[in-house]
Image: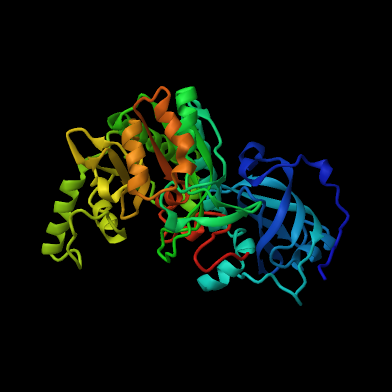
Length: 452
């Protein structure tokens, strides 16, 4: 059983602070509430490292600077024991955060016993072990930093739309029909009727866009793709704007301004976290408009030339959608996100408007993040004609009764309109420079993982 130890301490004597705000208390005594991350001993000196969710700081305690009870309690601490510690903030340029804490007093809230130690030590662990203990792995400085960056990406994404006249409208998670294709739906029993977990909020926010003009949705989405790639999750978060009277060119401008705002916000507000995970900020500093734009035809030519030059293992078959190796190679050719547009209509979704100059192509775009990260945004101008949309639904063998409400949007006051979706986790992977999407979300859901 966990142990509890209490020493004589009056933490209320010093103001409660967080590690992130210690710079405001230089030379003052403060109280921190957190956990022991690590403990080093050197003779009569103890060097505990504390974490509190906002950062880490090294404490210093000499056998003569604190009471014997506090010194012994500190010396007996085990990894991840929870504590309330009081100490004086001292500037130290050598310290990672610029400050250290001269320990004065300590209260042990819960001491982790040696007989049942914290399972994630500072040594290396395999990925499977860490994912099985994801609920604890989150406490590590690197994983905590990733989650703080994720939170900043989500905050700044919503901020961009909130400050540019967009209204947030939340679509349902339970839906009667597919948006992206029936093969990737998670079915559920809805009181005896078939229903599905949403793949996207798009169809529903098309309705709210025709009511409010500029809208966005932000929530969880689900794809039952049996994929094991480093870019795929079965449950992820998507932010999706939709704008009435907007064409594809307007959408591309919206996407590049939106992405630039997010990246610059992370650079401004989460520089310490980028340093913790070892992300080079120089690779993000030039993420600003304009982004390069590339037609599908030109991208296909580039891929086939790369195959001829021995850079790719297989030629690209014109008319197909791009696979992960294609997107990786293309996005490695640019130092900014590249906007690939006008894909063949046959490989894209039923709701995409055909190019009036050549109906074989759709007015759509995928935005590929640089450094090989591939697609992070997919969007299009939507079909505005009732007759064309009705025909498309039939061509794709979709249940027309489930789409009657969607067809109504073209019956009553249809206008050109456009929108895109950005998967938060792919954006986090790119901005953080992560190898795998499983670290971008607190609890990843993948093909073979639904625990913890």
